[in-house]
Length: 366
Length: 206
Ligand SMILES: Nc1nc2c(ncn2[C@@H]2O[C@H](COP(=O)(O)OP(=O)(O)OP(=O)(O)O)[C@@H](O)[C@H]2O)c(=O)[nH]1
Ligand SMILES: [Mg+2]
Image 1 (cartoon, rainbow over the protein chains, first blue to last red):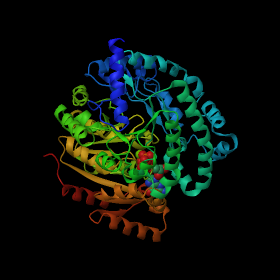
Image 2: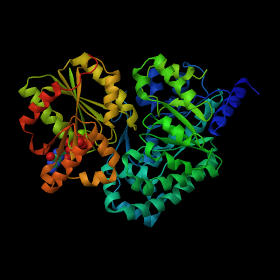
Image 3: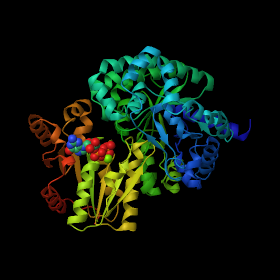
Image 4: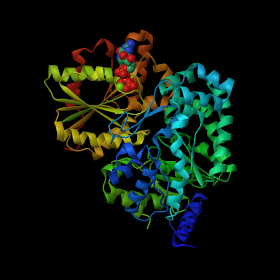
């Protein structure tokens, strides 16, 4: 075994132990960063987010200067890939935006009311294939650069770093809401709830099967199963229990059945509904929070049921000091850990985060 | 420098209102004003709507994620102060922002401004629907406001209006509540009252 190999196994064990709710030798740290690495390394955002090879190299270079960590949640980045989750076009720096701006999901009403029927009649995959071609300007062809992802993964693993997120899948709510635009979609929930639900149920069949196929082909350790539009804060309990949670339950079960860890990457505030997450398989999920959900409450409610990951928020990373970040991380390690906890940034490390603050987060596990 | 933070769900009329407010501050009061547009998951700002002489507009965005916007905003406030040194910054928060946490971050990390005054627009036309679909969100926005503007009254029956206002007062007894139609213009008295109120609001980071 090479040194990198050994390191990889040691780190993987640490992460898996935490995910299984047990106590590793120390709390693992697994950051998530994309745009930050571009700014940190002075790479143009327009190149970073349109070329997975460049983003992979940039991420590796950036993190090589930030201390010793166990894994990453992203090996490379390709902004147009976001279209597959939220059924929107993505505005790209260098094309639709100045070359050093962040990419932007361009939410518009691309999906029509009639599309619910199209989904019900044709099935979701068939619908998506038309939608990609006609409304997302031949998205399928534009996704070609994603074929670099396996190589990107190998590049970080060769350095002994675990890729703790090898794919993405989400529920129909997130995709429909993005495709319809949030105001229009909320109206649909109010006016034609049965139709929306029928389309969701039909879509779910293909989403589950697509997810299984993806997992069988890529064999990742864990995948991103998340969202932000479907957060509790944006929906009444009645609607959340009808249009959100049942679908997450199915998706998570399918992922877990394949022997893969489901990362519940839940942005925005999910505090109200944490109790429901106890219905998900025990010790098989990781709840990744972004600072908006009360992570201490999550520990109280879910501490014996699922591993928690997070949640150094973007504000202290961008605006705070290394001491402040260190203190918060130590508090997380002691109060959320030391068992069943993975330290990470809350969602993506923001582009304007100070490198010394990111380093303080990484170093805090020692 | 003072900050007016404007919140309210997607499409509630924030941009329309801000245009009137900026115009008033620039033309009537002769102030230097900068507007910050904090976009996430919504249709980009209508340039025509905001391309008026006398003030600058700065747009910021957080990729696909809301959680980064607040930090971006705080950074932008600092930059604008250095670059333009305006008397007022008007911030249009994204329609999905949790207003209370935007205020917290501004107060905790922002520097050099005297105060934050928060205006939340409630869309009278969609109020019932939104209060039913996303009660936590709608009420927490209202709860964070110094001034709540019930907007689009041209499209809501008077009976509804009374019940909307009483609900808002129940959620936030401290806030001033006014009904307006931003599309049809805003009475100057409202702006004058707003400026008077603002000077009485809590100072931050002296
Ligand atoms: N009838 C009516 N329509 C209004 C009024 N105020 C705004 N609108 C309309 O409502 C729509 C949304 O207005 P905006 O000012 O863009 O709302 P916003 O809150 O800035 O929207 P986002 O930035 O997308 O969240 C526009 O079509 C406006 O013309 C009003 O008082 N009455
Ligand atoms: Mg607007």
